[in-house]
Length: 88
Image (cartoon, one colour):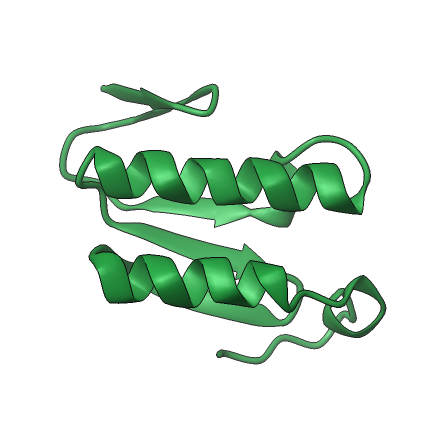
């Protein structure tokens, strides 16, 4: 198992990073998710991101990392945390 942000990930399994796993207010949650993305990328894990209506399926690589971090940077809680789900 590989510890990441307080979560243990079995070797070879994909990691899903979700809004409800992070703690705090909006900016704190966004910061924690960004840190988890950086750690998962560093450790060579496949990771997906699901935040509100945004969803990126598990992958890894610099393009995936950039897409996930860019999505967090553009995040708008008022718009993105609606109940309907769409895939980015």
